[in-house]
Each structure stands twice: as structure tokens, then as C-alpha cells.
Length: 106
Image 1: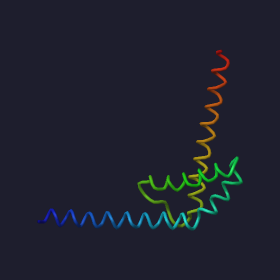
Image 2: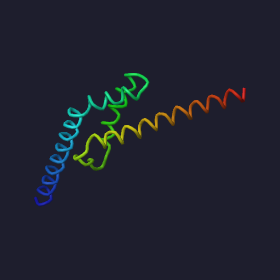
Image 3: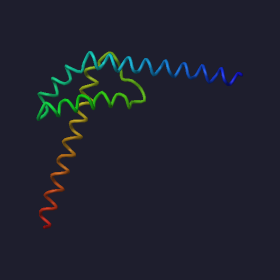
Image 4: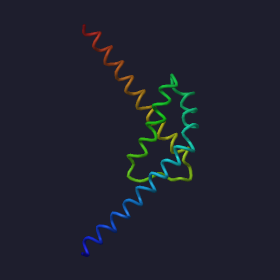
């Protein structure tokens, strides 16, 4: 009986924490998505790329073991998004280098 009560208590705590995380991400998304999209639209080559990157940023938040500081959410979103922009650029450059290398061999 004690184990069942302990498991039930743990489940309640976990569900409460998940609910808080979902509420936090939902709040961040509602408050900052349009702003982040507008910022990305200025930086990205097209609006579709900006849409994808803005959504990827929020998906990245879901994979974090701990939520970021809520005091400066836009700063955190910019850092995360800039990292994704750098990663996309790096992958694009690697792809171009690879294609050029292949062409030179043929």
C-alpha cells in the first residue's frame, strides 16, 4: 500500500511539473512568437525559412532538461535562434563544399 501511495504521489508531482512546463512554453510562444518571426524574417532569405526557424526555436525549448530564465526570454530566444542560424549556414556551406569537391573529381 505504501509503494502505491508513493508512486501516486510521484505521478502527481511529475504531472504538475509537466503542466507548468507546458504552460510556460505556451506563454512564451504566445508572447514572443510574432516578435521572433519578424526578427527572423529580416535575417532569413525567405519568410518560409523564418517560419521554420521560429518553430524550431520553440521545439528546442521542449527538449531542454530545464527551462531557461524567464526574466529575459527574448534574449534566450535570440541566442537559441542564432545558434540555429549558424548551424543552418554551416550545413549549407558543408554541402556546397562537398558538391564542389565532387565536381572537381569528375
